[in-house]
Image 1: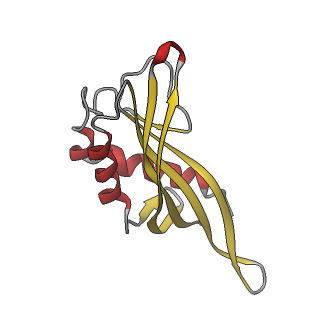
Image 2: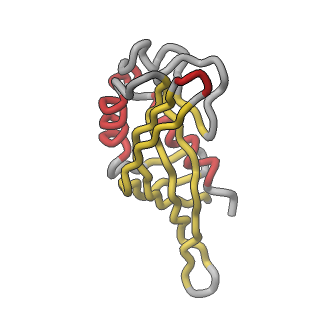
Amino acid sequence: MALTTPRVQAWIYAKLTADATLMALGSPPLSTGVRVYPDTIPQGVAYPAILFAFMTGEPVKAIGNIQIWTEMLWIVRATTVGSTAAGLEAIANRIDTLLDGASGTAGAGTIFTCAHDQERKDVQELPGGNRQHYLGRYWRIQARTS
């Protein structure tokens, strides 16, 4: 069985970038340069952006060591740099609308369920007195590859 993580990553990216309402949010809009990134945000990009990452996963197996699916935990967050988190709530709320209860496919992968989990809000102090703000949540995703 192939790894599930790359399939789910592709599904999340496609789900978010295909939504015109989400891509129109932000100033400049998220569609400018399609600022949705797995794992890390490249240096020099405009903000706001969306950052998502795989946190952990565990196979769910039946008798006979047959894998049914992988229970995964992902984090998806809107982020911006500045003195305030202005605009992040609208982006995070739209992400919730798109992902909560969603299912689908990505290549040889099937996403059975995507359900919201804990919310997450962070602020990091940056050099020069600026701040990086994050707002989003963890997502429980059940998926399998064929």
